[in-house]
Length: 231
Length: 231
Image (cartoon, rainbow over all chains, first blue to last red; front, top):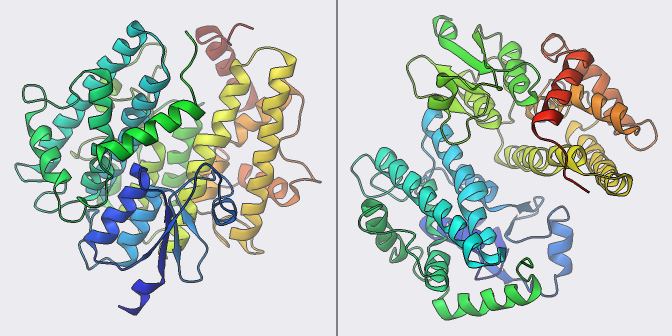
C-alpha cells in the first residue's frame, strides 16, 4: 500500500474530531504521519491549509489540496479505501440516514455540551442537561433501529455513526463528572450504555482517546481562554 | 421511469432549501408530487416525517422512510438517479471539496443573512454586511477555482454547488434591497455576478424561485413571528 505513506494528519489529541479521523485510519489500517498542532499558537501549516475555519483536523494526501473537517475527511477516506472496512453503507437510503444522524450529533447533540460549559447558574445548566438527556434518548432509539439487534450502529462492524459518536465518549465522561449526571444509563439507554463500553475498548480507538486527566487539563485551558457567559 | 411517480416533496415555495430539491428534481426530469406545507400551522405529516427538526423539505420515496434536510435529499436523488444529470463529481477529492463549500454556504454564509435580519441597529447591521461581502468574495474565489474557466461551479453543467448556492438567489435580491448593499458586484465578484444571472434564468430553476413580492411577504411574516433582537 504505497499510497498509505502519503497520508498526514494535522491534529491535537483532545479533539474528538481529530480522534474520528484517527479511528478511521486505524480501522482501515492506513499508515499515516501525525503532525501535532498547537492551538494556543496556530501554525502556518494550519492557517494556510484551513484558512476558512483555522481548525483541526486537516488531512493531507500526497500533493492534493488539504482536506479539513472531520466528517468530510472520514468520508473521503472511505471513498479512497473502499475495500478495507467500509464505514458508510452502500445503499442510498442507509447513507442518507447516516448523514442525517451525523448532522444531528454534531449540530445538536455535541453543540449542547459547549452550551452546558458556557451557561452560568444551576438553573440554566439543568435545562441543558435535560436536553442532553433527551438527545441521548433519541440516539438510543436510533441505535436500536440502525443496529437491528447487532453490535454497532453499523451492524456487525463499526460504521460511520459508531465513529462519529464514539469519538466523543472520552468527553461524555468528563461532562458527566463535572455536572453530576448520567448521559447514558441502564434504564433510559441500556443498549447505548453497552455500546459505549464496547466502543471505548475497541482495538482501533482505545489508544486514540486521551485519558480523563489529559481531557480535564484541556477543559481547564478552554475555560481559561473562553470563559463561560456572565450570569 | 415508473419509480419517478413515487416521489413526493413536502415543502413551502419561499424556502430556498425546498427550492434546492425542486431544482434537482427538474434537472433530472423526475416527476413528483408537491405537497404544500403550512408553516404557520404545521401538518401532522411534517411532524411525523421530520420529528427531530419539524422543517421542510421532506422527501418521500415510495414506502421508504421519509428523508429530511435539503443537502441529504439532493445527494440521495443524485445516488438513486446517477445517470441523469449527475450533480456531484465522481472523484473523492471533488466530492470532498463540494461538501466543504456546501457546509460553508449553509452554516456560515446563509447563517449571516438570518443574523442580519435579527440584529438591531445600523452599526450591528453594517458589521454583518461586511462579513457577507467577505463571504461572497470567498465564494468568487471558489467559483473561479472549481468552474475552471467554464460556466458553472460544476463546469459545463449545473452541479451540486450551483444548486446549493443558486437556490438562495431570490433571497439575496431581497436582502440587497432591504439593506442597501450589493452582495455580488462587477468589481469584487465579476464571475459570480455573471453566474447569478445564468442561474436565475436557468430552465430548471426559473419557475421554482418565487418572485420578489412573494418573498417579501414571507419576510414580513417571519419578522412578525420571530422579531429582531432588542437593541
